[in-house]
Image 1 (spheres, rainbow, N blue to C red):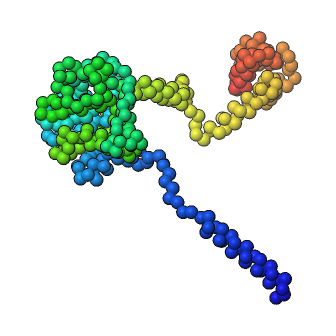
Image 2: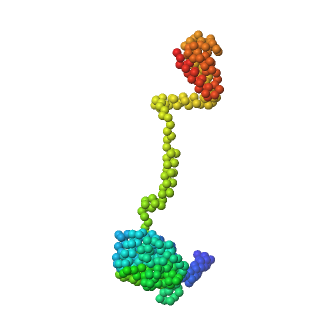
Image 3: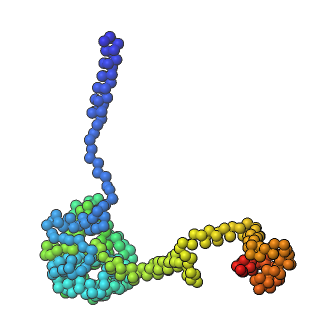
Length: 371
């Protein structure tokens, strides 16, 4: 290897070494966290983080989508967080919940709007005043005192009835402006009314203030029983829902089906005897040939063939007619067939229309069939 080749190889090696040195000198390894949309159970259950937090604290918790007695036994000391719209709770479930609260349960729920105060559940509780209140936001501060850990509690304020306000325990708000949170005793149990469950939902529990707020919310029965997180309520069975809410669609579908069946069904007409099976093809062929000849020249050629067939048969049966023409021939044919001479003469005239064609063909057929 000559000097020039060695120099080029050395330069290439030096350049590669320089690139490697620059890479390691400027490279910095970092852990990057990217937020992704929730999926799986976290997508449908907004209280999944609260449930996992309670499990970490060795507190029994369970997420549900029903209020049925089989899934929600409701024992004294349990806590039920009703995250679904309270207006979806029927009268039977409302009476069961109120009886359970009076026996020592803790019910957390949110009115959401003033109209919900007139639902079976709130009627059975007898706590809310249906008068509307303003929308408000309040900052919840954590024990650290840092504003970065604060979380906001926002929602429409609610009002309490005077007898319920007299028993009020912990609250956020005033009787004049309304409340964002209120805890009231009911029998041996407790009812906590919250304007919004946003501080307990999804990623809000990352903030220390939200965690402390959730801990204080669960304080009445904390550690005594199971915490049930009802994040949704199953609707009625599909067939029942379809019958109640979907009858317009069912009616439209039935009409469309009836119209399609009427369009696709066979049209019923007079019953005609079917030709014999062994003659069907022949009859169809003869009929098609006749229709073709008639369409070609309005039946004139077909009429001429019929006339020739009658005359040929007549001359074979009665040779004396060979010399007859015109009126004499028509008179002879009328005498043999017992038909009117004028009708016979018209049958040999070229037809002017379809009716005349049919009349002439019928007359010629009778003349040809005579012995």
